[in-house]
Length: 290
Image (cartoon, rainbow, N blue to C red; front, side, top):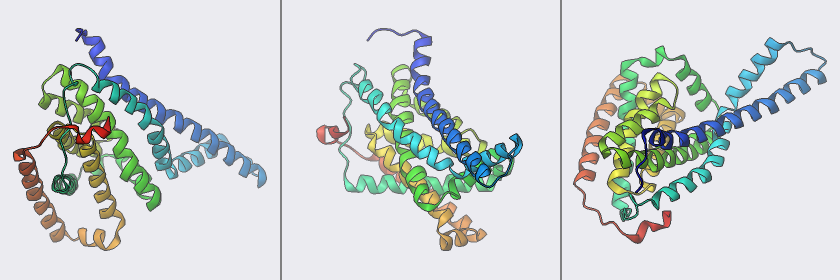
């Protein structure tokens, strides 16, 4: 394989992030343009004169209300584009002989246990640290996610966001990093980039920790479907803890919260050890992802 200079290496790592970010910004801009048309149309219909400040306030409110729709549309557009780069990368000489693991039902079960327990434990750490109060951006993001309606919440935050993020951060960024540095460093750096991409302190901490698990799963199974499944499981768990009132009410009781967080830690450790000691066969059964 031809040697690449440092600028080319950095460019290969960062430009996929730019693609996703750029698509999200374009979708946001077009959404803002369409929303402004409706705002001015409604004001004209009612005979109300809008000033710039009122129009800006209404636009901001509408963008927040429709934030998950923007995320969903951007993810749907970005996924096929990133898959092109992902499949192209798999043909590079560094990965040409790297086969994905054959996945059994019990593997999926343990991966889900790892993801769910990781979500609960990491969220518990964030709650105990009380860092949410220092991040207004996180409070705004939470409002966007959990005030959008359960259907779009599940589709955007629960399914499509995990798919696009795993293809990007584990399928492309991590595997490209692995061409230049050792796997552990690659997992850490891709996880930090994953955290930074969320643009707020709380999600930086949570996503960086979760990213380490997802990166480890990618390295262990060499199969993009595994971290995608884990990420979906973690996000669905977060949605359940917030949107299912009996569960969220129970979770707010301090003794229950502490007990669940501690149990989640032990399940997380045991699941990780089971995966670490597991012996997997690497072969053609998962070549469908190609």
